[in-house]
Image (cartoon, rainbow, N blue to C red; front, side, top):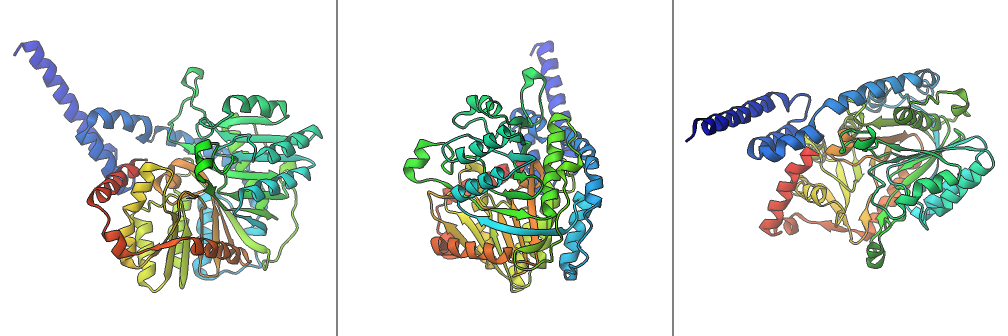
Length: 487
């Protein structure tokens, strides 16, 4: 062998082992064991793929930058948060009180009063309710959705926004850059919104040629709308037709089934605060003005009135507050837990909490779609069914072609949790989410009523049936379980 060739191969070998040794001591830092193992497997066995992918979407660099931006944004609303102390008339039991304290410590948002003005499992009803609220707007409207499309279904809301802007109402809209790119009408959307008088911005844009770059796997997945600081909507609906703009989906009857809620009272100010932080993050414009945080009437929980707390999470929150909240609520359960999630990929802590609840005698039900719309996450989710069924979790599979996309949880008859967060690695750490915690009112019952609708339409998966699935499906599920940990 030529000496130069030998030298070249020696340098490559040294570099290969040096990078692998570096990865072993660097990748696991502040990362879950499952995710660390998956990254290291990819890096050690397929370095030509593993290293570039890690530096693109696995490194902590952008997350650290987002932590600082979030810290600055949180400071802008600190004064408003201080004016909303924990409800003195609410004395939750110790286990729930500790979760409320944890949420406040991790997010800065307190437990306040709020009212549940409507639960919307139908997209048409949801869009119409938002449009009706916008038609009553006199001062401002905040709109923020992961996916935004101006189509036949959403026109009712966009027309209301255009009317509002026409009468002098300030209308601001945020949409995720990559989240909205692949849907019909995207090229005309910006011009249409500007022509309608809507001031809009992309969230987390990825445009290297314009100097806008960040990890492409970090997205803003929140869905919210605020009118005059008096009315707000949160949940899992995106601002798009339920068939997601696909003629093929419409022909086969495939539609996304979501659940969102309308709220009033002090909790609306917290929803406004989340929008204000996101607007500042994307534009640098400070909306920390009194007009966006009007005084609210005092509500005593009961019936439509609740004690409520908004819990935001995402790359700007290194403590992963929504994940901690999910785990704590399941541990708190005494009688029953019902979980609805389209992407259910629990980590070790959440999986242990769920199975332990069953072993304590708690009835745990999981509502998932029979067919997922995401290949990797769908198969990763299936890899957990065996251990869940063996523990005694009741798995309801909602029939295809509908994509069950709601994201909510109820614990006993005490607590409801609803919003944009899935139960997977991405929602816990990589995407910006919001979840609404509510207790002391009737939201739990309303979501349980929706569970009954799902229950009647779904089929219960049995352990015997699942154990008989072909080996190649089991293999694929397990491979995708590893890749889900990377995302």
